[in-house]
Amino acid sequence: MAEDREPAVNISGGDAGGGVTAEFDPATADTRAEEVVDRLGELYWQKTYGGRDAFTCLVRTILSQNTSDKASQPAHDALVERYGGEGVDLAESLAAAEQSALAETISAAGLYNQKSEVLIDVAEWVLEEFGSAAAFDAFVKEEAPETVRETLLEVRGVGPKTADCVLLFAGGRAGVFPVDTHVHRIYRRLGIAPPDADHEEVRAVLEREVPAEKCGFGHTASIQFGREYCTARNPACLEDPDACPMGDLCDQVGVYPETGEVVDPADASN
Ligand code: SF4
Image (cartoon, rainbow, N blue to C red; front, side, top):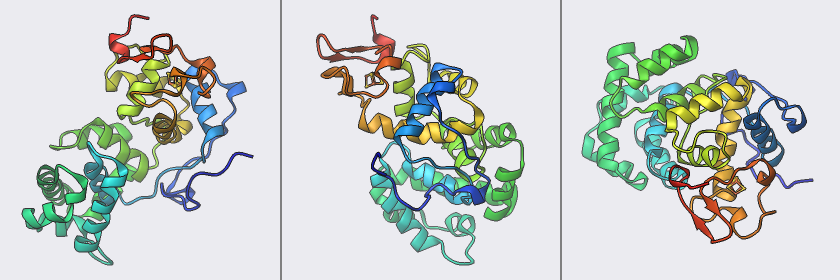
């Protein structure tokens, strides 16, 4: 049996938050994209999504922009310790925060000046539009996903990936496949999305071809796969054609084992 590499606690919320479970069986997949996600389901610890507080989730995702989880998690913990807590409305306390103090608190996440400004803006926006973090949470969980997404995208500092992560991790919404740099790279290398597709185009392909209940898992498992196997500079297949579990499903767009070269799929000649 494969070793369970992931934490025993479901960090993504779990069934209680409205997440849906899915069967991962590559033999019954209808599309190549679904087959990839099904194999990821065999490779990694499966989880369901939803149930996190939406504003905390938004804060967490903003902190993680342009940095690793390893760097942004301590920043998030420090922020929650200083500004959150039992009975505290995090949006209210961030809206009232002094920018330089907040920047110092989140310094581990990088780009802390910019991120602290965005966090204060977002907190003010939540209070103006919804009145409290709890009311914002209800909006994310109850409104139509497209309405939530469009509303979030109007806010400075919130891009498509951040909006989708809030929908997925807080709302537990099926059919949302956020595209980060790993997902963007992997599905163009596989030849599932066009080589020159931008993030939104890759998202559209995946949300069309992967069943709704598998999109959330597909997102996080693809990131893990991108870190372990299909890395940006040194994909597993470069030296050993059998080293990647997706080898037989992959077009290796922009990956050249003969010369050891790797280019962005948009610049590939194959
Ligand atoms: S075969 Fe290579 S390019 Fe394709 S998914 Fe695996 S590591 Fe990435």
